[in-house]
Amino acid sequence: MVNRTVPELVAAARGGELRATARLLTLVERGGEMADRVAEATHRHVGNAHVVGVTGPPGSGKSTLTAVWTTRLAEAGRRPAVLAVDPSSPLTGGAILGDRVRMAEATAVGVFIRSMATRGHAGGLALAVPGMVRVLDVAGFDPVIVETVGVGQVEVDVTAATDTALVVVTPGMGDAVQANKAGLLEVADMFAVNKYDRPGAADVRRDLELMLDLSKLTGHGRPGAVARPPILSTVATTGEGVADLADAVDAHLEALKAAGMLATRRNERRLAEVRSRLDHLLLEASAVALEDESDPDAGPGGAGGHVGADDAVLAGEPPGVTARRLAERLLRGFEG
Amino acid sequence: MPDGLPVRVVLAKLGLDGHDRGLKVVARMLRDGGMEVVYLGLRQTTGSIIDAVEQEDADVVGISMLNAGHLTLGPRMVDALADAGLDVPVVIGGIVPDEDRPALAAAGVAGVLGPGAPADEVVACVRAAAASRGR
Image 1 (spheres, rainbow over the protein chains, first blue to last red):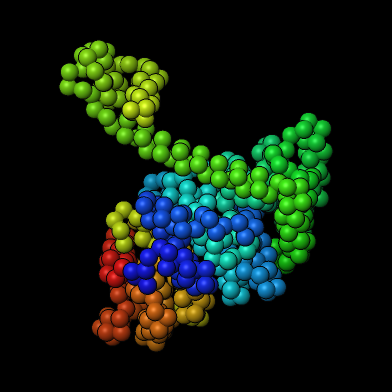
Image 2: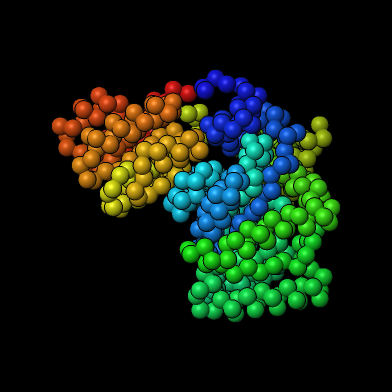
């Protein structure tokens, strides 16, 4: 397996070989030229998998819910795969990827699970997620479930990367729900109120219903929304409500198809991937621009040539001015 | 392992041994050493570990045993990976008497970490095991 080419790996993955799929995922995750080759070899064959995002606050039960749900799907003869994203340490780059702990049962019935770290990417997903979703799609998995890190602006990322976005909330987080309601409302295609056996669950449900009522009045909501997001009640640890959740997810795909919105969302997904790749390249370019040293003939104030960021700081140039100068220089470089 | 990429390690308790604090400490050490740790936790079998190694495309397997099962289960893990065609080194951590180390090395165990092993040693041992991998 060491020396197989990308097309050989793709053919093997399409034939159901898990190890080839795993290797392709690694190549995509590492990025660079090999990742581009995998993208070349896969992007024309995608589109068979329903891509579902599962997001929500840490500890809301995303992994447990996903495990119970995918176990049922596998038992019913489907081939679900899970991409589980956990954060990388900003200090060391290391990560503890713990989702498999709660997914042992799912693994036992053949659910394919891949853990991944954000590797410095902000937004709750990793840069490689769209490419890895493509690999799983081409390998014949359906649905492909992307479980995000549960914080911050996650919601936006998961919307851009999936067909259907499920937001998991729990009782006892009333304030958090209030605080996040704009974000949640804008991205959710459906909600699961998990830990529904706990006190306060009905209140969470009511709050969500009210928010949805208001959003209808003001015309907000996720672009391409085909229906009012359903609110499911679940207890992941007992499996209660999970069958309804599974049905709601399937129904959302059918609704997207019926409304002619599936292709639109998938085009938006590709555009979002272009945007996040571009952002990444610009970040890299900006790191280079920051390191660019002054021209030897640069006089005071940059009269004779380029003054690098370090010298500009020492010379007391206002940071905003330095930044604009560096940005203009970068853009000139792109034009040349 | 290409340079600059995080080493991916699958960590598990193999067999019936409910003591996982040591493994959690090791997970933290490896994380702080810049590695990506796929944590499986308690009561894993050679089969469940192999599933994880395969799907996660891991570079190293770390198993923890505090129940004196290492001479039986350590070599069994190494053999099971080889039988599955997976070229992934195994590191064992736990209570391993010094006199057992040659037998484990002979069985193909890439490294042994005893109680109180400092973080530097743990990270270096796993890193060396990853580097020994033929890919």
